[in-house]
Amino acid sequence: MASKADVKKVLDRLQIETPSWAYGNSGTRFKVFGQPGVPRDPFEKVEDAAQVHKYTGAAHSVALHIPWDKVEDYAKFAKHAKDLGVVLGTINSNTFQDDDYKLGSVCHPDKKIREKAVRHLLECIEIMDITGSQDLKLWFADGTNYPGQDNISSRQDRLSESLHETYSHLKGNQRMLVEYKFFEPSFYTTDIPDWGTSYAHCLQLGERAMVCVDTGHHAPGTNIEFIVAFLLRAKKLGAFDFNSRFYADDDLIVGAADPFQLFRILHEVNINGGFDVGTPVSFVLDQCHNIEAKIPGQIRSILNVQEAAAKALLVDQGALEAAQAAGDVLEANGVLMDAYNTDVRPLLEEWRSDKGIDPNPMKAFKASGYLKKIADSRVGGNQAGWGA
Ligand code: PSV
Ligand code: MN
Image (cartoon, rainbow, N blue to C red):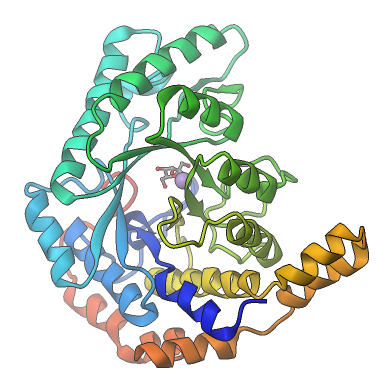
């Protein structure tokens, strides 16, 4: 079993990236409820992200979404982040909000539209060159709504060609993370619906291409921890997009819907080397806070990941392996449950005190008055949301 000191060492290096879009307004197709103080531009989004890092010590980078976070001067933007104590992280591409993409982007039947989509992906790489971001995250809304609408395997050919073209432009330590999602906005076929499809393309592309597991992108009942174990074993798990879901791609706070599932996932991460020094796995949130306040929503998410990670680290691996080798099913399951049922909050409070952070980040942020400050100062302009 990991000692308290071992758990703290992993917590020291466990950084969870927050998404710029979590700080903007969001909602459903029925209604977007605006909130006072929401950022008007990418610079203000990063200011809010820096608050999450300030109170957790575990959210050192911010994922951007292009074009939502387009700025004139990316070097200036990166410096702004640095001055606030954070860095610019994953660049998320967006080939789903342009009229041209009605029938798809990189899989579109028209070569000109595919070329336009690839040009956008290359623009994202150019932004990475300036910001120093390592990861290009690709999620495609491509798919079809009706049987017969397009040729499924031809779409795979187009996808493969577009991915290869993009991949050939990666340099230095840059990586391509290929995300999958089983449906929405396409309702009949999706061109990258599952981890297997993503994995197959990543294998063909090469070492720099890895799979991104968004925890909200599976059919109900899918065993996500199996996928995580498989991909880690194959050295193809590049990143998580963490969130939780009750029904579809709900984008709720990670660990809110099913904390036990989050623990099981992080147990597989732990035993398959995903928390090791130099891990290739990056831990990112992909959430929207439709009805709750955004900054504390992100803080809560970080705490949930840390709690589940600490519990996973406390699994008595020796006892577990002995029980497994003896075929003692109940003992093995009991070892896992003992760790899950441990209250790790005191340990995390201690870790925060060691780091000079308030042991209760939610309370400390609430008391800081930051939400009132931004509500009072951010007047005028257009609040950011999906599409800005
Ligand atoms: C798609 O549903 C997705 O999970 C992708 O990661 C996008 O980039 C992100 O959501 C936008 O919120
Ligand atoms: Mn995602």
